[in-house]
Length: 344
Image 1 (tube, rainbow, N blue to C red):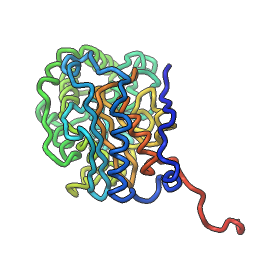
Image 2 (image 1 turned 90 degrees about the vertical axis):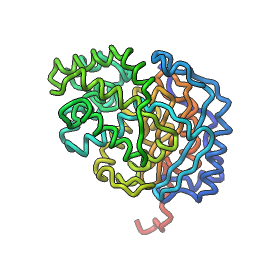
Image 3 (image 1 turned 135 degrees about the vertical axis):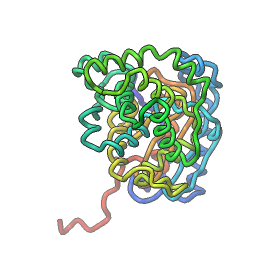
């Protein structure tokens, strides 16, 4: 299996001495400088392929590339195609997980959805069978569909309204569905319907499987930008408060749960490699979106449609790797404490 390993992508050595996960983001000028540098570094990377198994995604311009960083102080800095809209796809899983965690609670999520990595692809049916019907985690399709099944309402429309309103609050603006993507995915989501039927046979959820898959397909078809992803991620970094609007979208404990789940499985079977290289909870989508979060600091949103074999944006991963070091976003980075140790 290929693994994420990026040679020579570390930030400049002179700045790395201060690049640790504690503290705050660097000043706005330095953030903008490094963001622009990341865009220049990786704009010419032609690695990967655009997702073609969803017809509506196959024709996207593969050269689009946008980066945006939102701080918990509400400052948003962008570079490149950061305001180009695309469908959120699997990145919606992270934020719907948070909405459902807020609704049903920590213990129900852990028991009914799970928080462990399957070690298998995002749309694996085998993972369900190997784990006696457990979805395992909400970042793969089985767990995400299970999480969506908890959306409250008496019909598809009311349940969809709950999901769309929540995603919009995370973004700080009214999001809309991409009808072309929704129709395209609805015509090609037989595997997800099969997953929902299998989960239903195990008693994994009580909602109607077909209706649940429809709501899930809609949530994946919502249009966002790299800037939206940055603000959505920064909301999780800021204890559930949208740093741009000031809206308390979810509780701080929900953010903790969501970031833990992302760390475990946000990059699917590559999640261990991702943490080893980048050191931030993150979530990718097959449209080329990627969000990475540094709790207490902010979040990086990116859009670049070329994907690696696991379905993760190539340019987005490389930019995240560079910026993680340059801006001190890696959760596992630290410096020796300067206090006198002679008395210890």
